[in-house]
Length: 463
Ligand code: FAD
Ligand code: NAI
Image 1 (cartoon, rainbow, N blue to C red):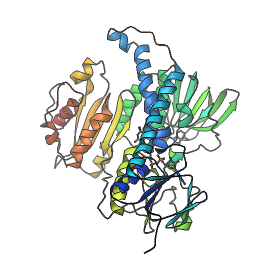
Image 2 (spheres, rainbow, N blue to C red; image 1 turned 180 degrees about the vertical axis):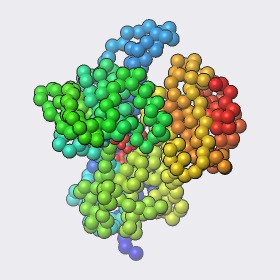
Image 3 (cartoon, rainbow, N blue to C red; image 1 turned 120 degrees about the horizontal axis):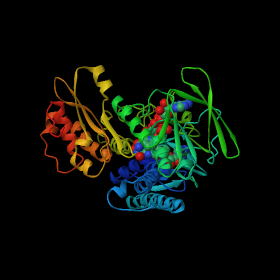
Protein backbone atom coordinates (compact mmCIF):
# COMPACT_ATOMS: atom_id res chain seq x y z
CA UNK A 1 0.00 0.00 0.00
CA UNK A 2 1.26 3.45 -0.87
CA UNK A 3 2.64 5.50 1.99
CA UNK A 4 0.64 8.72 2.16
CA UNK A 5 1.34 11.86 4.20
CA UNK A 6 -2.23 11.78 5.53
CA UNK A 7 -5.21 9.46 5.61
CA UNK A 8 -7.54 12.34 4.74
CA UNK A 9 -6.81 15.68 3.09
CA UNK A 10 -9.59 18.24 2.92
CA UNK A 11 -9.50 21.22 0.56
CA UNK A 12 -11.44 24.12 2.11
CA UNK A 13 -12.24 24.87 5.74
CA UNK A 14 -15.85 26.10 5.51
CA UNK A 15 -18.61 24.40 7.52
CA UNK A 16 -18.28 21.40 5.20
CA UNK A 17 -14.49 21.11 5.31
CA UNK A 18 -13.75 21.96 8.93
CA UNK A 19 -16.48 19.65 10.25
CA UNK A 20 -15.25 16.82 7.99
CA UNK A 21 -11.70 17.40 9.26
CA UNK A 22 -12.66 17.32 12.93
CA UNK A 23 -14.89 14.25 12.50
CA UNK A 24 -12.18 12.41 10.53
CA UNK A 25 -9.63 13.16 13.24
CA UNK A 26 -12.09 12.05 15.94
CA UNK A 27 -12.36 8.75 14.06
CA UNK A 28 -8.60 8.25 14.34
CA UNK A 29 -7.61 9.31 10.82
CA UNK A 30 -4.47 11.42 10.20
CA UNK A 31 -6.08 14.56 8.84
CA UNK A 32 -5.04 17.85 7.21
CA UNK A 33 -7.09 20.73 5.84
CA UNK A 34 -5.93 23.18 3.18
CA UNK A 35 -7.30 26.72 3.45
CA UNK A 36 -6.18 29.79 1.53
CA UNK A 37 -7.92 32.42 3.70
CA UNK A 38 -6.15 34.04 6.63
CA UNK A 39 -8.68 32.45 9.00
CA UNK A 40 -10.57 29.15 9.07
CA UNK A 41 -14.35 28.78 8.75
CA UNK A 42 -14.94 29.53 5.05
CA UNK A 43 -17.60 31.80 3.67
CA UNK A 44 -19.96 31.07 6.55
CA UNK A 45 -17.82 32.26 9.43
CA UNK A 46 -15.82 34.94 7.62
CA UNK A 47 -18.21 36.70 5.23
CA UNK A 48 -21.52 34.81 5.36
CA UNK A 49 -23.80 33.39 8.05
CA UNK A 50 -22.02 34.82 11.08
CA UNK A 51 -21.23 38.43 10.10
CA UNK A 52 -24.64 38.80 8.42
CA UNK A 53 -26.37 37.63 11.60
CA UNK A 54 -24.25 40.04 13.65
CA UNK A 55 -25.49 42.93 11.49
CA UNK A 56 -29.07 41.62 11.44
CA UNK A 57 -29.15 41.29 15.22
CA UNK A 58 -27.68 44.74 15.89
CA UNK A 59 -29.89 46.46 13.31
CA UNK A 60 -32.96 44.75 14.82
CA UNK A 61 -32.26 46.56 18.10
CA UNK A 62 -31.74 49.86 16.28
CA UNK A 63 -34.99 49.42 14.37
CA UNK A 64 -36.95 48.46 17.48
CA UNK A 65 -35.80 51.71 19.09
CA UNK A 66 -36.37 53.80 15.95
CA UNK A 67 -39.73 52.43 14.83
CA UNK A 68 -41.58 52.79 18.14
CA UNK A 69 -41.59 49.08 19.10
CA UNK A 70 -39.61 49.80 22.27
CA UNK A 71 -41.70 52.88 23.10
CA UNK A 72 -44.77 50.67 22.90
CA UNK A 73 -43.28 48.62 25.73
CA UNK A 74 -42.56 51.67 27.85
CA UNK A 75 -38.94 52.20 26.85
CA UNK A 76 -38.35 55.62 25.36
CA UNK A 77 -35.07 55.96 23.48
CA UNK A 78 -33.92 57.95 20.49
CA UNK A 79 -31.29 55.75 18.87
CA UNK A 80 -28.08 57.15 17.49
CA UNK A 81 -26.18 54.97 15.06
CA UNK A 82 -22.54 54.19 15.86
CA UNK A 83 -21.74 52.28 12.67
CA UNK A 84 -18.03 51.71 13.47
CA UNK A 85 -19.06 50.04 16.75
CA UNK A 86 -21.67 47.94 14.95
CA UNK A 87 -18.94 46.74 12.57
CA UNK A 88 -16.54 46.18 15.47
CA UNK A 89 -18.95 43.80 17.20
CA UNK A 90 -19.44 41.99 13.85
CA UNK A 91 -15.68 41.58 13.44
CA UNK A 92 -15.37 40.45 17.03
CA UNK A 93 -17.95 37.69 16.48
CA UNK A 94 -16.06 36.56 13.36
CA UNK A 95 -12.71 36.63 15.18
CA UNK A 96 -14.00 34.60 18.09
CA UNK A 97 -15.65 31.95 15.94
CA UNK A 98 -12.86 31.58 13.36
CA UNK A 99 -10.36 31.41 16.24
CA UNK A 100 -12.56 28.73 17.77
CA UNK A 101 -12.06 26.53 14.70
CA UNK A 102 -8.27 26.99 14.89
CA UNK A 103 -8.50 25.88 18.55
CA UNK A 104 -10.60 22.83 17.61
CA UNK A 105 -8.10 21.90 14.87
CA UNK A 106 -5.25 21.97 17.41
CA UNK A 107 -7.29 20.05 19.96
CA UNK A 108 -8.15 17.33 17.44
CA UNK A 109 -4.67 17.32 15.84
CA UNK A 110 -5.89 18.45 12.42
CA UNK A 111 -3.05 20.12 10.51
CA UNK A 112 -3.97 23.39 8.77
CA UNK A 113 -1.98 23.68 5.54
CA UNK A 114 -2.12 27.34 4.52
CA UNK A 115 -2.43 28.14 0.82
CA UNK A 116 -4.37 27.23 -2.32
CA UNK A 117 -4.64 23.58 -3.20
CA UNK A 118 -4.43 22.25 -6.73
CA UNK A 119 -4.61 18.58 -7.80
CA UNK A 120 -1.50 16.86 -9.12
CA UNK A 121 -3.30 13.50 -9.28
CA UNK A 122 -6.14 11.80 -7.40
CA UNK A 123 -3.99 11.33 -4.28
CA UNK A 124 -1.73 14.39 -4.51
CA UNK A 125 -2.33 18.12 -4.03
CA UNK A 126 0.13 20.95 -4.56
CA UNK A 127 -0.01 23.80 -2.02
CA UNK A 128 2.58 26.44 -2.86
CA UNK A 129 5.95 24.69 -2.63
CA UNK A 130 4.52 21.72 -0.75
CA UNK A 131 3.29 18.49 -2.33
CA UNK A 132 0.85 16.66 -0.06
CA UNK A 133 -0.42 13.13 -0.53
CA UNK A 134 -3.43 11.44 1.05
CA UNK A 135 -5.35 8.20 0.71
CA UNK A 136 -8.63 10.13 0.55
CA UNK A 137 -9.18 13.72 -0.57
CA UNK A 138 -12.34 15.73 0.13
CA UNK A 139 -13.16 18.75 -2.04
CA UNK A 140 -14.98 21.31 0.14
CA UNK A 141 -14.11 24.48 -1.74
CA UNK A 142 -17.53 26.13 -1.39
CA UNK A 143 -18.92 28.85 -3.62
CA UNK A 144 -18.55 32.51 -4.63
CA UNK A 145 -20.85 35.27 -5.80
CA UNK A 146 -22.36 34.84 -9.27
CA UNK A 147 -21.42 37.95 -11.24
CA UNK A 148 -23.96 39.89 -13.29
CA UNK A 149 -22.61 40.16 -16.84
CA UNK A 150 -21.35 43.66 -17.59
CA UNK A 151 -21.56 44.80 -13.95
CA UNK A 152 -18.27 45.27 -12.10
CA UNK A 153 -18.26 44.90 -8.33
CA UNK A 154 -16.13 47.77 -6.92
CA UNK A 155 -17.20 47.17 -3.26
CA UNK A 156 -18.00 50.89 -3.00
CA UNK A 157 -21.00 51.74 -5.17
CA UNK A 158 -21.59 48.24 -6.55
CA UNK A 159 -21.15 45.62 -3.85
CA UNK A 160 -21.60 41.91 -3.36
CA UNK A 161 -22.62 40.41 0.00
CA UNK A 162 -19.11 40.88 1.42
CA UNK A 163 -19.10 44.59 0.52
CA UNK A 164 -22.66 45.01 1.78
CA UNK A 165 -21.60 43.69 5.19
CA UNK A 166 -18.84 46.28 5.45
CA UNK A 167 -20.36 49.52 4.15
CA UNK A 168 -18.91 52.49 6.05
CA UNK A 169 -22.01 54.60 5.46
CA UNK A 170 -25.76 54.08 5.38
CA UNK A 171 -26.73 54.35 1.71
CA UNK A 172 -29.41 56.87 0.77
CA UNK A 173 -30.84 54.47 -1.79
CA UNK A 174 -29.74 50.86 -2.03
CA UNK A 175 -30.92 48.85 -5.01
CA UNK A 176 -30.76 45.13 -4.41
CA UNK A 177 -30.56 42.99 -7.54
CA UNK A 178 -32.16 39.63 -6.69
CA UNK A 179 -34.93 39.00 -4.16
CA UNK A 180 -33.36 35.87 -2.68
CA UNK A 181 -32.01 35.22 0.80
CA UNK A 182 -28.99 37.54 0.64
CA UNK A 183 -30.95 40.43 -0.89
CA UNK A 184 -33.66 40.23 1.76
CA UNK A 185 -31.34 39.78 4.74
CA UNK A 186 -28.82 42.46 3.81
CA UNK A 187 -31.51 44.73 2.32
CA UNK A 188 -33.26 44.49 5.72
CA UNK A 189 -30.08 45.47 7.58
CA UNK A 190 -29.61 48.71 5.64
CA UNK A 191 -33.34 49.52 5.50
CA UNK A 192 -33.45 49.31 9.30
CA UNK A 193 -30.44 51.60 9.57
CA UNK A 194 -32.15 54.24 7.43
CA UNK A 195 -31.58 53.46 3.74
CA UNK A 196 -34.33 53.47 1.16
CA UNK A 197 -34.23 49.95 -0.30
CA UNK A 198 -35.56 48.83 -3.69
CA UNK A 199 -35.33 45.17 -4.65
CA UNK A 200 -35.39 44.22 -8.33
CA UNK A 201 -36.32 40.58 -8.90
CA UNK A 202 -36.36 38.73 -12.22
CA UNK A 203 -39.18 36.34 -11.23
CA UNK A 204 -42.76 37.34 -10.44
CA UNK A 205 -42.21 36.75 -6.72
CA UNK A 206 -39.35 36.90 -4.18
CA UNK A 207 -37.78 33.90 -2.42
CA UNK A 208 -37.74 31.19 -5.10
CA UNK A 209 -37.93 27.67 -3.68
CA UNK A 210 -40.10 28.69 -0.73
CA UNK A 211 -43.79 27.79 -0.36
CA UNK A 212 -46.02 30.02 -2.54
CA UNK A 213 -48.14 31.43 0.30
CA UNK A 214 -45.02 32.12 2.35
CA UNK A 215 -43.48 34.01 -0.59
CA UNK A 216 -46.60 36.15 -1.02
CA UNK A 217 -46.91 36.91 2.70
CA UNK A 218 -43.19 37.70 2.99
CA UNK A 219 -43.49 40.18 0.14
CA UNK A 220 -46.37 41.95 1.94
CA UNK A 221 -44.45 41.98 5.20
CA UNK A 222 -41.28 43.46 3.71
CA UNK A 223 -43.35 46.08 1.86
CA UNK A 224 -44.91 47.05 5.20
CA UNK A 225 -41.38 47.43 6.55
CA UNK A 226 -40.52 49.82 3.72
CA UNK A 227 -38.73 47.66 1.13
CA UNK A 228 -39.98 48.34 -2.38
CA UNK A 229 -40.16 45.51 -4.90
CA UNK A 230 -39.88 45.66 -8.66
CA UNK A 231 -40.82 42.13 -9.76
CA UNK A 232 -40.64 40.39 -13.16
CA UNK A 233 -37.84 42.76 -14.05
CA UNK A 234 -34.21 42.38 -15.01
CA UNK A 235 -31.31 44.79 -14.65
CA UNK A 236 -29.60 45.05 -18.01
CA UNK A 237 -26.99 47.68 -17.25
CA UNK A 238 -25.46 49.58 -14.35
CA UNK A 239 -23.50 52.76 -15.16
CA UNK A 240 -21.51 54.38 -12.34
CA UNK A 241 -20.60 58.03 -12.31
CA UNK A 242 -18.88 59.23 -9.14
CA UNK A 243 -21.01 57.95 -6.28
CA UNK A 244 -24.16 57.42 -8.31
CA UNK A 245 -25.20 54.32 -10.17
CA UNK A 246 -27.83 54.42 -12.88
CA UNK A 247 -29.54 51.08 -13.41
CA UNK A 248 -31.38 50.19 -16.59
CA UNK A 249 -34.37 47.94 -15.93
CA UNK A 250 -36.34 45.92 -18.46
CA UNK A 251 -39.45 43.81 -17.97
CA UNK A 252 -38.35 40.15 -17.77
CA UNK A 253 -40.69 39.34 -20.67
CA UNK A 254 -39.21 42.17 -22.76
CA UNK A 255 -40.50 45.69 -23.26
CA UNK A 256 -39.62 49.30 -22.62
CA UNK A 257 -36.57 50.05 -20.46
CA UNK A 258 -36.64 52.44 -17.49
CA UNK A 259 -33.85 53.72 -15.24
CA UNK A 260 -33.42 54.24 -11.50
CA UNK A 261 -30.58 55.81 -9.54
CA UNK A 262 -28.89 54.53 -6.41
CA UNK A 263 -25.79 55.29 -4.35
CA UNK A 264 -25.36 51.59 -3.57
CA UNK A 265 -26.18 48.51 -5.64
CA UNK A 266 -26.08 45.03 -4.08
CA UNK A 267 -25.64 42.20 -6.57
CA UNK A 268 -27.20 39.08 -5.01
CA UNK A 269 -28.32 36.86 -7.86
CA UNK A 270 -26.96 33.59 -6.50
CA UNK A 271 -23.66 31.82 -5.91
CA UNK A 272 -21.60 29.41 -8.01
CA UNK A 273 -19.31 26.54 -7.02
CA UNK A 274 -15.54 27.16 -6.58
CA UNK A 275 -13.55 24.86 -8.84
CA UNK A 276 -11.27 27.36 -10.63
CA UNK A 277 -7.61 26.58 -10.14
CA UNK A 278 -8.29 23.16 -8.59
CA UNK A 279 -7.04 21.34 -11.73
CA UNK A 280 -9.88 18.84 -11.41
CA UNK A 281 -8.81 17.22 -14.69
CA UNK A 282 -5.54 16.07 -13.09
CA UNK A 283 -7.61 14.06 -10.59
CA UNK A 284 -9.71 12.67 -13.47
CA UNK A 285 -12.73 14.86 -12.69
CA UNK A 286 -14.86 17.37 -14.59
CA UNK A 287 -17.47 19.74 -13.26
CA UNK A 288 -21.05 19.44 -14.56
CA UNK A 289 -22.77 22.16 -16.63
CA UNK A 290 -23.59 24.13 -13.47
CA UNK A 291 -19.97 23.97 -12.35
CA UNK A 292 -20.77 21.47 -9.58
CA UNK A 293 -18.91 18.26 -8.76
CA UNK A 294 -21.21 15.28 -9.09
CA UNK A 295 -21.19 12.73 -6.28
CA UNK A 296 -22.95 9.51 -5.30
CA UNK A 297 -25.04 9.06 -2.15
CA UNK A 298 -21.82 8.49 -0.16
CA UNK A 299 -20.34 11.83 -1.39
CA UNK A 300 -17.76 10.01 -3.50
CA UNK A 301 -17.00 11.50 -6.92
CA UNK A 302 -16.55 9.39 -10.05
CA UNK A 303 -12.91 8.89 -8.96
CA UNK A 304 -12.49 6.47 -6.04
CA UNK A 305 -10.84 8.16 -3.07
CA UNK A 306 -11.92 11.68 -4.13
CA UNK A 307 -14.98 12.98 -2.32
CA UNK A 308 -16.90 16.28 -2.41
CA UNK A 309 -19.34 18.09 -0.08
CA UNK A 310 -21.04 21.43 0.59
CA UNK A 311 -21.70 24.27 -1.85
CA UNK A 312 -19.46 22.72 -4.52
CA UNK A 313 -21.88 19.77 -4.98
CA UNK A 314 -25.54 19.84 -6.13
CA UNK A 315 -28.21 20.79 -3.58
CA UNK A 316 -29.04 23.83 -1.46
CA UNK A 317 -26.10 26.07 -0.59
CA UNK A 318 -26.53 26.03 3.17
CA UNK A 319 -24.04 25.80 6.01
CA UNK A 320 -25.93 23.16 7.98
CA UNK A 321 -26.23 20.96 4.88
CA UNK A 322 -22.45 21.31 4.35
CA UNK A 323 -21.80 20.45 8.02
CA UNK A 324 -23.95 17.32 7.92
CA UNK A 325 -22.26 16.24 4.70
CA UNK A 326 -18.89 16.86 6.41
CA UNK A 327 -19.76 14.44 9.18
CA UNK A 328 -21.18 11.86 6.76
CA UNK A 329 -18.21 11.94 4.36
CA UNK A 330 -15.72 11.47 7.22
CA UNK A 331 -17.74 8.53 8.50
CA UNK A 332 -17.88 6.99 5.01
CA UNK A 333 -14.12 7.39 4.58
CA UNK A 334 -13.61 5.73 7.96
CA UNK A 335 -15.66 2.74 6.81
CA UNK A 336 -18.82 3.65 8.72
CA UNK A 337 -22.17 4.57 7.15
CA UNK A 338 -22.61 8.32 6.90
CA UNK A 339 -26.01 9.47 5.68
CA UNK A 340 -27.68 12.84 5.06
CA UNK A 341 -31.42 12.95 4.42
CA UNK A 342 -31.58 15.64 1.76
CA UNK A 343 -35.39 15.65 1.90
CA UNK A 344 -35.30 17.19 5.37
CA UNK A 345 -32.95 20.19 5.21
CA UNK A 346 -34.46 23.31 6.80
CA UNK A 347 -34.13 26.74 5.15
CA UNK A 348 -34.25 29.93 7.18
CA UNK A 349 -34.25 33.60 6.21
CA UNK A 350 -33.07 35.57 9.25
CA UNK A 351 -35.22 38.64 8.78
CA UNK A 352 -37.76 40.07 11.25
CA UNK A 353 -39.81 37.95 11.59
CA UNK A 354 -37.83 34.95 10.40
CA UNK A 355 -39.04 32.86 7.48
CA UNK A 356 -38.42 29.12 7.62
CA UNK A 357 -39.40 25.89 5.97
CA UNK A 358 -38.55 22.21 5.74
CA UNK A 359 -39.73 19.52 3.34
CA UNK A 360 -42.12 20.03 0.45
CA UNK A 361 -43.90 23.24 -0.49
CA UNK A 362 -47.68 22.93 -0.80
CA UNK A 363 -47.32 23.22 -4.59
CA UNK A 364 -44.77 20.38 -4.80
CA UNK A 365 -46.76 18.20 -2.38
CA UNK A 366 -49.97 18.63 -4.43
CA UNK A 367 -48.12 17.54 -7.55
CA UNK A 368 -47.28 14.26 -5.80
CA UNK A 369 -50.74 13.47 -4.45
CA UNK A 370 -53.62 14.48 -2.20
CA UNK A 371 -52.73 16.60 0.83
CA UNK A 372 -54.33 18.19 3.89
CA UNK A 373 -53.11 21.62 4.98
CA UNK A 374 -53.39 23.22 8.42
CA UNK A 375 -52.57 26.85 9.13
CA UNK A 376 -52.34 28.84 12.31
CA UNK A 377 -51.76 32.62 12.47
CA UNK A 378 -49.13 34.02 14.86
CA UNK A 379 -51.76 36.64 15.80
CA UNK A 380 -53.54 33.77 17.62
CA UNK A 381 -50.41 32.76 19.55
CA UNK A 382 -50.37 34.25 23.05
CA UNK A 383 -46.60 34.76 23.24
CA UNK A 384 -46.35 36.45 19.82
CA UNK A 385 -49.31 38.65 20.68
CA UNK A 386 -47.85 39.63 24.06
CA UNK A 387 -44.51 40.45 22.42
CA UNK A 388 -46.26 42.65 19.79
CA UNK A 389 -45.21 40.21 17.03
CA UNK A 390 -48.48 39.36 15.29
CA UNK A 391 -47.10 38.88 11.75
CA UNK A 392 -46.87 35.46 10.17
CA UNK A 393 -48.31 31.98 10.39
CA UNK A 394 -47.37 28.33 10.57
CA UNK A 395 -48.48 25.96 7.85
CA UNK A 396 -48.30 22.17 7.91
CA UNK A 397 -48.78 20.04 4.82
CA UNK A 398 -49.64 16.38 5.46
CA UNK A 399 -50.38 13.42 3.24
CA UNK A 400 -54.19 13.12 2.99
CA UNK A 401 -54.14 9.34 3.38
CA UNK A 402 -51.32 8.62 5.83
CA UNK A 403 -51.34 11.99 7.68
CA UNK A 404 -47.55 11.94 7.48
CA UNK A 405 -46.07 15.46 7.58
CA UNK A 406 -44.60 16.38 4.19
CA UNK A 407 -43.65 20.01 4.79
CA UNK A 408 -43.76 22.73 7.44
CA UNK A 409 -43.45 26.46 6.71
CA UNK A 410 -43.43 29.35 9.13
CA UNK A 411 -43.17 33.10 9.36
CA UNK A 412 -42.60 33.95 13.01
CA UNK A 413 -39.99 35.86 14.99
CA UNK A 414 -38.17 32.67 16.08
CA UNK A 415 -39.20 30.59 13.01
CA UNK A 416 -35.59 29.45 12.48
CA UNK A 417 -35.55 27.87 15.93
CA UNK A 418 -39.13 26.56 15.69
CA UNK A 419 -38.44 24.73 12.43
CA UNK A 420 -36.02 22.31 14.15
CA UNK A 421 -39.01 20.66 15.81
CA UNK A 422 -40.61 20.14 12.42
CA UNK A 423 -37.39 18.69 10.98
CA UNK A 424 -37.05 16.30 13.90
CA UNK A 425 -40.67 15.22 13.57
CA UNK A 426 -40.25 14.60 9.84
CA UNK A 427 -37.05 12.58 10.41
CA UNK A 428 -39.08 10.34 12.71
CA UNK A 429 -41.93 10.08 10.19
CA UNK A 430 -44.35 12.10 12.36
CA UNK A 431 -48.00 12.51 11.44
CA UNK A 432 -49.84 15.77 12.07
CA UNK A 433 -51.65 13.89 14.83
CA UNK A 434 -48.32 13.10 16.54
CA UNK A 435 -47.48 16.82 16.63
CA UNK A 436 -51.00 17.85 17.64
CA UNK A 437 -50.91 15.51 20.65
CA UNK A 438 -47.38 16.46 21.75
CA UNK A 439 -47.45 18.80 24.76
CA UNK A 440 -45.84 22.17 23.92
CA UNK A 441 -44.81 24.57 26.69
CA UNK A 442 -46.98 27.65 27.20
CA UNK A 443 -46.53 30.46 26.38
CA UNK A 444 -44.17 29.77 23.47
CA UNK A 445 -44.21 30.58 19.77
CA UNK A 446 -43.85 26.82 19.19
CA UNK A 447 -47.43 26.28 20.30
CA UNK A 448 -48.32 27.64 16.84
CA UNK A 449 -46.81 24.45 15.34
CA UNK A 450 -49.02 22.32 17.54
CA UNK A 451 -52.07 24.41 16.61
CA UNK A 452 -51.26 24.23 12.88
CA UNK A 453 -51.07 20.44 13.31
CA UNK A 454 -54.48 20.54 15.01
CA UNK A 455 -55.74 22.65 12.09
CA UNK A 456 -54.71 19.92 9.64
CA UNK A 457 -57.47 17.97 11.37
CA UNK A 458 -59.75 21.04 11.53
CA UNK A 459 -59.39 21.53 15.29
CA UNK A 460 -57.13 24.52 16.26
CA UNK A 461 -58.22 26.13 19.54
CA UNK A 462 -57.14 29.78 19.40
CA UNK A 463 -58.65 30.97 16.11
P1 FAD B 1 -17.34 27.63 2.11
O1 FAD B 1 -17.89 28.07 3.41
O2 FAD B 1 -17.51 28.53 0.94
O3 FAD B 1 -15.80 27.35 2.36
C1 FAD B 1 -14.93 26.97 1.35
C2 FAD B 1 -13.54 27.40 1.74
O4 FAD B 1 -12.64 26.80 0.83
C3 FAD B 1 -13.29 28.89 1.64
O5 FAD B 1 -12.78 29.39 2.85
C4 FAD B 1 -12.26 29.05 0.52
O6 FAD B 1 -11.32 30.07 0.79
C5 FAD B 1 -11.59 27.70 0.54
N1 FAD B 1 -11.03 27.31 -0.75
C6 FAD B 1 -11.65 27.31 -1.96
N2 FAD B 1 -10.83 26.82 -2.90
C7 FAD B 1 -9.67 26.51 -2.28
C8 FAD B 1 -8.44 25.96 -2.72
N3 FAD B 1 -8.24 25.61 -3.99
N4 FAD B 1 -7.46 25.79 -1.80
C9 FAD B 1 -7.63 26.14 -0.49
N5 FAD B 1 -8.78 26.64 -0.03
C10 FAD B 1 -9.79 26.82 -0.91
N6 FAD B 1 -26.00 29.46 5.05
C11 FAD B 1 -26.77 29.10 6.10
O7 FAD B 1 -27.05 27.92 6.26
N7 FAD B 1 -27.23 30.04 6.98
C12 FAD B 1 -26.97 31.35 6.85
O8 FAD B 1 -27.40 32.16 7.67
C13 FAD B 1 -26.17 31.76 5.75
N8 FAD B 1 -25.90 33.06 5.56
C14 FAD B 1 -25.11 33.44 4.52
C15 FAD B 1 -24.86 34.79 4.33
C16 FAD B 1 -24.08 35.22 3.28
C17 FAD B 1 -23.81 36.69 3.09
C18 FAD B 1 -23.51 34.25 2.39
C19 FAD B 1 -22.63 34.69 1.26
C20 FAD B 1 -23.77 32.90 2.56
C21 FAD B 1 -24.57 32.49 3.62
N9 FAD B 1 -24.89 31.13 3.82
C22 FAD B 1 -25.69 30.77 4.86
C23 FAD B 1 -24.36 30.09 2.94
C24 FAD B 1 -23.16 29.40 3.61
O9 FAD B 1 -22.18 30.36 3.88
C25 FAD B 1 -22.59 28.32 2.70
O10 FAD B 1 -23.62 27.41 2.33
C26 FAD B 1 -21.48 27.55 3.40
O11 FAD B 1 -20.46 28.41 3.82
C27 FAD B 1 -20.93 26.47 2.49
O12 FAD B 1 -19.93 25.78 3.16
P2 FAD B 1 -18.75 25.05 2.37
O13 FAD B 1 -17.93 24.40 3.43
O14 FAD B 1 -19.29 24.24 1.28
O15 FAD B 1 -17.91 26.22 1.66
P1 NAI C 1 -30.69 33.21 -4.27
O1 NAI C 1 -30.57 32.12 -5.23
O2 NAI C 1 -31.29 32.96 -2.94
O3 NAI C 1 -31.52 34.43 -4.91
C1 NAI C 1 -31.14 35.05 -6.09
C2 NAI C 1 -32.34 35.78 -6.66
O4 NAI C 1 -31.89 36.59 -7.72
C3 NAI C 1 -33.41 34.86 -7.21
O5 NAI C 1 -34.65 35.24 -6.70
C4 NAI C 1 -33.31 35.06 -8.72
O6 NAI C 1 -34.55 34.91 -9.38
C5 NAI C 1 -32.83 36.49 -8.79
N1 NAI C 1 -32.12 36.86 -10.01
C6 NAI C 1 -31.24 36.11 -10.71
N2 NAI C 1 -30.76 36.82 -11.75
C7 NAI C 1 -31.34 38.04 -11.68
C8 NAI C 1 -31.24 39.24 -12.48
N3 NAI C 1 -30.42 39.30 -13.51
N4 NAI C 1 -31.99 40.30 -12.13
C9 NAI C 1 -32.83 40.24 -11.05
N5 NAI C 1 -32.95 39.14 -10.27
C10 NAI C 1 -32.21 38.07 -10.58
O7 NAI C 1 -29.20 33.79 -4.14
P2 NAI C 1 -28.54 34.76 -3.09
O8 NAI C 1 -29.56 35.56 -2.36
O9 NAI C 1 -27.46 35.45 -3.83
O10 NAI C 1 -27.89 33.75 -2.07
C11 NAI C 1 -26.92 32.80 -2.51
C12 NAI C 1 -26.92 31.56 -1.68
O11 NAI C 1 -26.47 31.83 -0.37
C13 NAI C 1 -28.29 30.95 -1.57
O12 NAI C 1 -28.25 29.72 -2.24
C14 NAI C 1 -28.56 30.75 -0.14
O13 NAI C 1 -28.89 29.43 0.13
C15 NAI C 1 -27.24 31.12 0.57
N6 NAI C 1 -27.58 31.97 1.69
C16 NAI C 1 -28.31 31.45 2.72
C17 NAI C 1 -28.72 32.24 3.76
C18 NAI C 1 -29.55 31.64 4.83
O14 NAI C 1 -29.62 30.42 4.90
N7 NAI C 1 -30.17 32.42 5.69
C19 NAI C 1 -28.37 33.65 3.84
C20 NAI C 1 -27.65 34.11 2.68
C21 NAI C 1 -27.26 33.28 1.68
